[in-house]
Length: 86
Image (tube, rainbow, N blue to C red; front, side, top):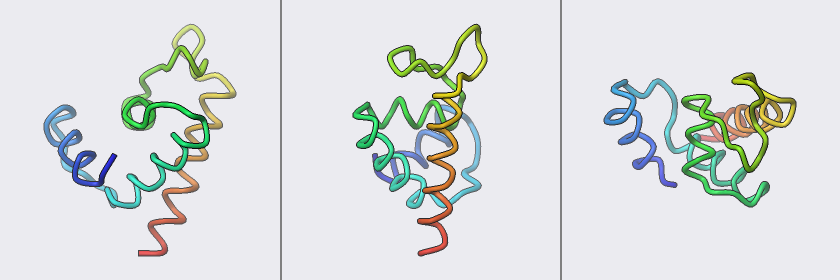
């Protein structure tokens, strides 16, 4: 995913203004998606909307699992790394 795709998704689908660096977000999402070998679009939805990913067991009974929290925390950490490098 590109930063522009993420920005467009936030504006159109979530009807919000992006508050974060979409390019740094893109790098973090793509890196984590590669690490867990999963679709970057769905990883973005997990982060931005807390949308469950059954295949990665991110939620149980609508609550985040340890795996879901780990993926989200990794995304946040990587985002901050890329954001500070810009």
